Image (cartoon, rainbow, N blue to C red; front, side):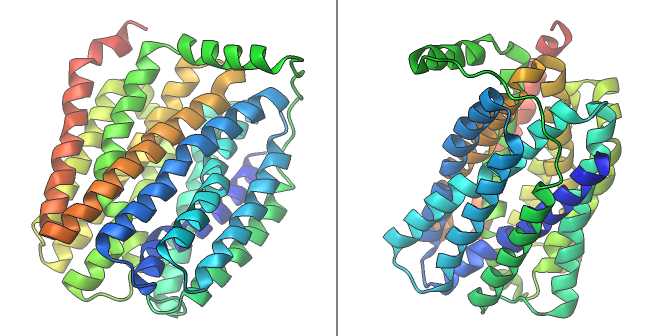
Length: 384
């Protein structure tokens, strides 16, 4: 079973290595300005709130994770194809809304399915999820060496993503099924139950989610503008390998990080993730020499790897099995979607008005807020 999830994560994150570095470049190729790119990517992130939340709850109710994943995969491929052609701002916004609703829930739904079907999720999740990082790294360096993808050809980028989504569709067919939950007859009762479930989630979960929200809000400047930053500041066109360095650094943390989260506690690990992200953003703001900039990419081990594995452990400690898809959806929606919308939109206006350095200093200040938060509420995690 671990092998099936490993293959699935490998393909999905290989596709992500196509979207994350190049989506901002595609929008720039369509001649959108920095603040427009920030708004469009913010809209894309905003859809990540509603998509994972609705689909995560829906999956928990029906138990048909695999079928839902198949539909999401097809929808992602079809919507992304529209980015091949020249489109207006409004059309681009509509395309990214639909693409976000399809694409963003895939990761959280896969995580939730893994948490419900792997026999020992704390130990086995890292072994499966690590292949996602390997997929991201492998395809990034493959693009870098091969040189097939660059920052001037959106058609190739879209084509490669579509092929990878086709492979993901086939991989989804091999994922395990779970027992289908009984449907409730009355929709109003379901809505009330959904709210009751959310209200019943314990305080440590919400502190963790809000900490991740702050960290990811600070990271939004990286996710939305790092490729453009490399192009404009360093005149680097081969960006895939640099993104791959970050993903490579997260591999050991994803593989072995859960044992350290259990040993040292969620609060300390969240604080460490926030501190590492703060240092990373400040380094970018200083526009250092290329070797130092590349070294800062290694802090992705904390910014993403440690943060993600810590939240996974937190959810498995605090949330019941039947509500984990919803919990993962809340994590994805708030800590990625809402934070991405706010952070990307603000970052775009800062870049447009003041440049990259001010934007990354702003991101560093934001992420330091999570250091303060986790220190202030550290005892909450000890008493629950």
